[in-house]
Length: 142
Length: 195
Image 1 (tube, rainbow over the protein chains, first blue to last red):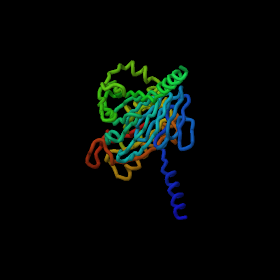
Image 2: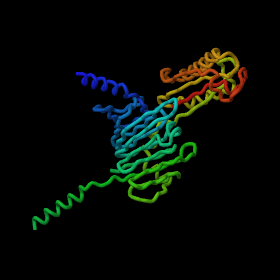
Image 3: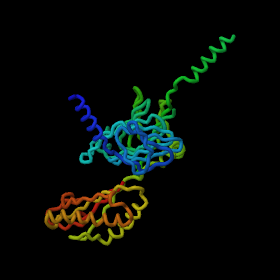
Image 4: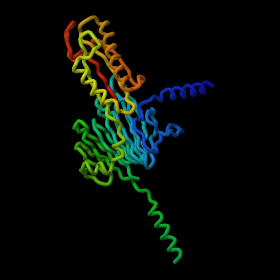
């Protein structure tokens, strides 16, 4: 019984922690946010949360602004997971991990990378990219 | 004979269905302000450092390739087009002791508003400041009033009030450090941060 209550409380605290970390600013064509078991059609103004996955169809593109001013865009036929996002707006400390499993991605790094060069990493099936204050593109051809 | 054909067919099928490693491409771009940062690509035990504009790392090539701006546009066009507008910051200045803009800032404001008008769904942060003339508490109120005045201009051009946050920092965050009771036009300002 006690464990059940603990598990329920833990469940609630996990829900409460799913804070908005960014916002969809650009949305075209077929594009979805996968959040847990939900599949939400992407619309401009929709909040983005840690653990969300952005999935686009053949004509879909999505642009996201994150709370540290990192900018990301995902091209057609792509899948990008927001694995980890944390940002302290006072100290500018943070961590941003994402994984592009297929398709294309454009990245403009934000305030957390200025504060700490190792704060942002992009993963692909075969590589890990460390980012030192820059703009770059990634493509995974399957 | 038939068996050989079957084995050959199975062999061909296995060959065609073999898992192929995805081909990966990473390209560094020159940023809007001309600054070039660095991307470090770690692939197994090998590490590549990309620190020149359009330097390109490919998963099936050990060497760093150099693409042209045009090739990058062809490979990544729709993705680049989907990037959100870059965050930007503006500052306007005030006549001493008031929330009235200086004549120069009145002119600047028109350009700022024009630049913000077409931004889809902007988030705006408006932060007011004062110089050190006057009482700390009075300056707190004055800085907040300056921020509210600027917010009013932004709402007038159609930015939803709910997307604008305001704050007054009083005389705590001067651009130019001064002794108390110093008239300093550069400190009488409002910062507008947009993304």
